[in-house]
Image (cartoon, rainbow, N blue to C red; front, side, top):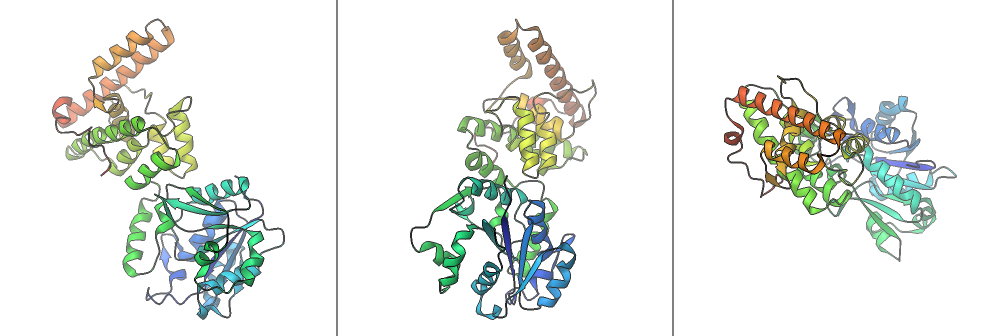
Length: 382
């Protein structure tokens, strides 16, 4: 990612009338909303961050004073958001090549989204870039600085959307697995939903997993169906273990299974997928995906999330359930002349059988009974 010479304009000047509380200074997790948005850009490598303030501006400036950002006062903030956009645009530093426009009431945008926009901008620096989640545009757009003069001459009727709808402007949509680009903080109910989402910020939703596989990395349907089937099996196993008293994080099991083959077209796809997920901000998913191909365990393993996904993957061939013995015999017949491959197959078989035996012992049910009602045809995503 080339984030050099990019700026971010954070719009934090409004009244927050619909909210009933002053949105920028609401505590969301460990920080206020405005601090969270500022930190997003710092983490993404955007050094020039300008916060436009108006209503209760002194309080906002005090809240972010230690973060080394520029603050610009919009004396006409009551005229609406576009007046704050223009206040930020006029304050762009010389040499800025482009700028994000980020309303403060979208505090759950992921760092990976900002990086993806910046990466795309480095290739197409004359285009307006929009993050898109499931074909829906959201915030923040990234605009080339060459449009600053045109914005200054434009009347502002209809806001930014009307501006870029005029003329023949180059536009690029950047698919991201980030529902946060659409989530506005407008009401108390929105705040409660965001607080709940923040608690599992490092685990993508089912919807985000689907978008990641289908639209961001465009995996073939066969790979997606396999992942859906593995997720269905993994959730049956994890749920049975949970009923037997084993503490497992079911959201982690499900999401990791849904994306475990996200790098299926790359060499050493388990390690490649783990690196990709770490870059996206999902380190716990990465730790499960990293070992889904080869997990060495002892004779009496205690099944954790990684073990459950590992076994589920071995119990699914294509998108259909398979018997472990049959699966590994097929592998051995295919690679039987390669001693190194045979050793790896035997190791994986031992691990799968040991995990299966542990699950059967803990739940008191055989694997066929455990998976009797699993649906690998319908897929794991509603």
